[in-house]
Length: 435
Image 1 (cartoon, rainbow, N blue to C red):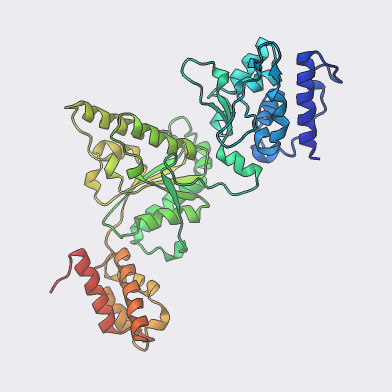
Image 2 (tube, helix red, strand yellow):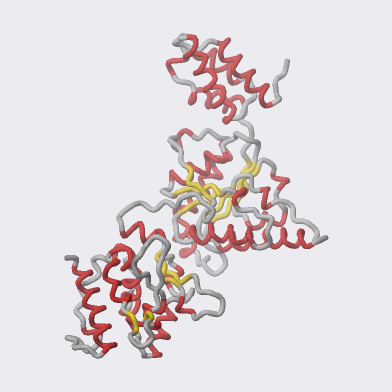
C-alpha cells in the first residue's frame, strides 16, 4: 500500500480515538511518523516550505481524489442527536456518494477543540495564503451568513491534473470562456515588415528575460510584472498568427478570449466572466489574446445613463485586471481608432500589422505555394501573384481554391489562369475586385 495512504489512515484513526476517548498509540497527531513528501512535492513548487498544518490540510483536500473510502469514517452519526456530527463538517456531491471535506473537516482533524489551532486553519484558508495565491487550494461555496469554515475544500484543476499525471488544459465553457490556439507553423514562417519584426524581437526579449532585467536595473518598484501589447491592422495581416507563434517560440500556451462569451447585458456579470479568465490564468505561463478587442475596450462613454456607468465600470475593471496580470496580454483590433486613447499608456507596445507590400507578398507566396505547383516558370507565377494586393489571410484562401481546382482538373502544376481566377474570386468576396 502507498505509504501516504497508510499515514492518512493512521492519522484519521488517531484523530477519532483522541476525540472519542478510545485507545490510541499516539498522544497527538504530530507523533505519527510521516513518510516524507515524495507524493506531495510534485504538486508544489520545489522552493515552497510547507508547515505541518499546511501539509495535513492539503492531505485532507487530496483524500477524495486519492483514497475516498478513507473518509467514510466521517459518516459516523451522533448517537445523542441521531444526525452527523457537526464538527465533522463535510458535504455530498451530486454524483459522488462519498464524504467530501469542508474547512470544518480540516479544523476537526487539526484542531478539534483547540481554538488557537482553529484560527491557524482559518489563516491557511484565507486568500492571502500561498495556497490561494498559487492556485493550489481554496475554500468556496459558503452560504450567506454561514461560518467561514463551512466552505468546500477545493483543489484547483491544475493540481488535480498533476495528481493523475496528465497535462492541464482547461476546457472552453461558461466558467472559462477562452480557448487554447495553436499553429503547425514556426517563427521562420512569420513574414512581416522588418521594423515590425524588430519590435517583436524586443517583445520576445522581455518575455524571456523580464525577471533579470527588472532585478538587474532595480525596476521592481516602478515596473509591474507582465507585458501588455496592442496589435492593430487590417484583417488577415498576421495578428493572430503572431500571437500564437509568440507563445510557441517561448514555450507558452496562448488562449484566445471569447469576448462574446464574456460581455453580458446583466450588471456585474461581465466582470465575473472576466474574473474567471484572469483568475485561472494568474498562475499559468499563458498569453491571453483578446481578438477584436474593441468590442469591450472601445470608446468609453459619457455617463448619461446607468447603462453607460455600467459599461464604464466594466472597462475600468478590465484595465485593472490587465495592469495587475503578471503574464502577457495581447489585444488585437482592426482599427486603432476603435481603442480608447486612455488605454494606450497601459500598453508597453502598440504594433501595426499592415497589408504586405509587393516584396513581402512575393515572399509569402513563395512560402505558401507548394514547390510542385510552380512547374517550369516559378518566377513568372510568383511575380504575377505578388502583383495583386492581398493580405496573408486572403492568400491562404487563394491557395485553398487553387488546390481544389488542381484536384478537380487533375493537373499537377498551377497555371496563371487558375491562379488569377482564384485571386479574382477572393477579391470579389472582399469587395476589392477591380474590373
